[in-house]
Image (cartoon, rainbow, N blue to C red; front, side, top):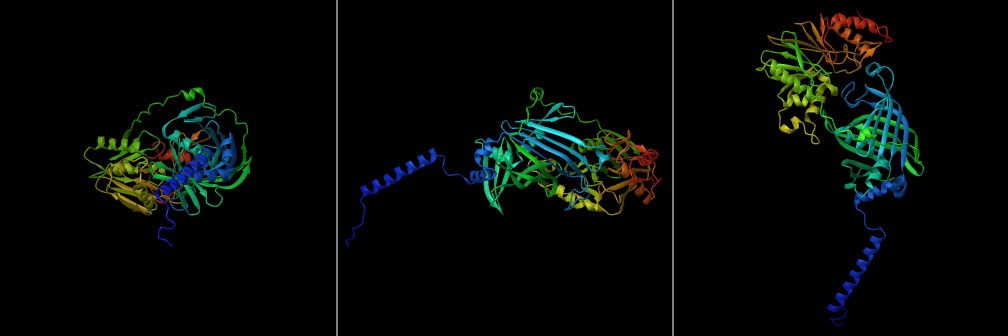
Length: 527
């Protein structure tokens, strides 16, 4: 064969390229016109989820959704102990869980009737909570029907809550305004990040069924910083042509925080008007409330009871430093540290005593460290928790400690059953509070120079949240527990300086203990 056999001339090659190019343009035009253009990985995940729920058109056509059921809420940050089990002490029984969605208008109402397993803590009987959202407007509805708008972080959280359901999030992800990113596979799931209305959530779908399996969001916690909130969905069933989950569980970080079973679900039912009232729409964000006045009274030599909010603090003077007892939140810690500088300008607050691990008593720990605390004293069972608090990232909303960067972390001194802090000026005896069902990490403090006892949550005299038969008793069933611990330690007590409630005499405590036995079954005075 000739060496030139089979060759294509330059002109022929040009014509061939033009023919294929024209065909390519024609094919692209046909695909574009028919809506069959290639999808991104992110779009494919959303499309698969929509198809599994009932189809893109069916998902977008749904106008209303109502779900009802019951279950349990678990109060994150109020556990009996800080461990893997977590959150077993403060449990709410959800007697009625109802969520009503007007998807056509981006509105919803969330209602729960719940009862605490500690009814004497929140008041006898059940609590009804009604929260609502209308587009970007979030509001709460009181028992009398009055609606009040909420702003800032509460409004953003409400919008996220609206999207934390497979149907609402997939609908939002199908809108042209949604931002889809980071499509990926992980284990037996496919995940995509979805930003809708400024709220970023991650949708996970089962790789086999394509049904939404989880919705994940990283939220800010004053105590724990960047915290993963994960809502899982299961037990799907068809409702009017749409697959809906009948089991919803939520974990906050590694702890279960809600478990709900849905017994009734309906689509396209009459939900009435969920629109925000005109007064709510026109409401403007009020200025922040003024900082509460912080007062300090010296209840014994070198010992101040610092009042001003629901959480009291104490300041104790040692020879070369001041000690702060309790750091409930940043605002409170700032105020008490300022008061300490006013009382003793030459003595820095270098030591913090933490009574137990609950979030409402430790949300100011990081600020205290940022402000110069170099030692934290607490019960041994709180050490792991405090190490966690001090080292977790705070990137969503950097706090003072995060902004300071490489701050040397404080020494954490653990107390077992008993401990003592003593120098020439001050003595503080520390005792583990035994057999308490609120928290097994609590310390009771005794100041011998004033015969004063301090404890965090067991006795809350004159606290308006804790009333039995018109008598403000504090956590009534725990009064006996406190009395037993005082007797065990053989303490000569004349006064109580509680973290919650008022400074009272021991006689008032004993009177409350006797009165309490009339209303709490099984209680018996130890006096």
